[in-house]
Amino acid sequence: MATTAEYGLGEFTYPRGWFMVLPAAELTGLQALRLFGRDLVLYRGESGRPVLLDAYCPHMQAHLAAEQTSGAGQNRIEGESIRCPYHGWRFGPDGRCDHVPYFNGQIPAAAALRSYPVQERFGGIFAWHDPEQGAPDYDLPALPEWDEPAWVRCTYDDLGTLPVHPQEIVDNIADTRHFGPIHGQILAYFDDVFDGVTARQRSGGGHETMAATTGILESDAVYTGPGILIARYSGETDAVQIILHTPKEDGVTQIWHGVITRAHNIPHAPADLDLHKQYHDLALGAFTQDFAIWRTKGPALSILQLPTDGPFHRARLWYKQFYNPRQNAASFQARANGLQRTREMPAHPSAAAAE
Image (cartoon, rainbow, N blue to C red; front, side, top):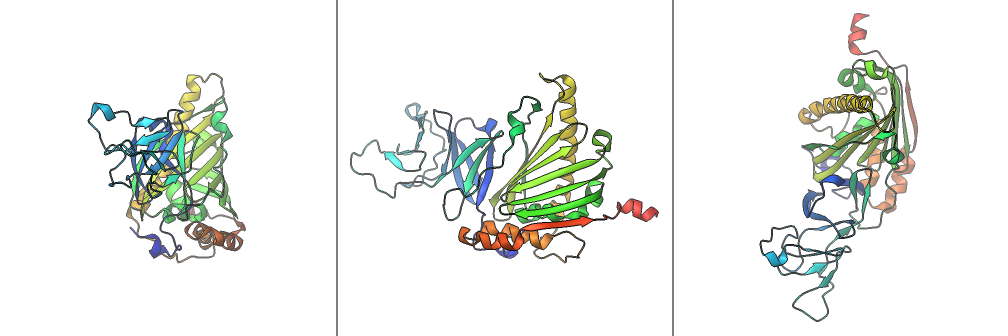
């Protein structure tokens, strides 16, 4: 495990951006979370709106999600606000204390919790994390397929945590040469396009495990910010793979995965659900092939890069914008932006050995 400082990413330990904090279906009652090196509490207000706050009451540092056995205090959600289980101080979704049950004077300004902007989209609850505590400066990616009736939605796979810095995961956006040895894919083309807060990988070729389902596999994968990857595939049917990773501690990453597919029938027939499961299992299998490497590799603090490796250095430069003050983001973007194209990909090693 290596830290942000060891990778030399920038001033901040944790990056600026939108991150999944929990699949929406899992938010029932109060939820204690540990992300970005902080203890957090997540809940739904009475309107159904999700709220994410720092976990410790500024009064005496009680955890807002701590168990409370008194019957009088069981329901701690009031409107969109939450009461501390220790002394009953109430905090609104903006993090400010708006009521103390035994005090009628002016509430101190310091009686406040850090509140995080939250959106519920495509089956997930996403929070904006910013070390400078600024408002979001880019939007969540669009996923219109999620709301179209022709598409079979997913339940997210909770893949747990890896003792790996997210830098190692993001490196995949530029890693041209691992597709053959790890995934059995013979690439015909591979492009990387860096544009502002997005990093896009377009590739296509044969695949030794997915060919039976898809034939030629073409992928268009886009990072929007540092922790949300949406990849669209064409084949027997269209599919979208969703990979979501969020820093838990410095050098430890929480990962979720999902796949949605276009059905041939509305309402969905058993064959559509079977095809969805096929795509899910193949995509998850391919993704977990990377896990076997990440779990056992040493940290690549620097990469001994060859000209035909893929644009690792450019991708890492793009990634640094999220670990530095936002006033510097445009500088990193200007140095990273553009297209890098790789053609005439070598054959899979087993094919090359037979020549």
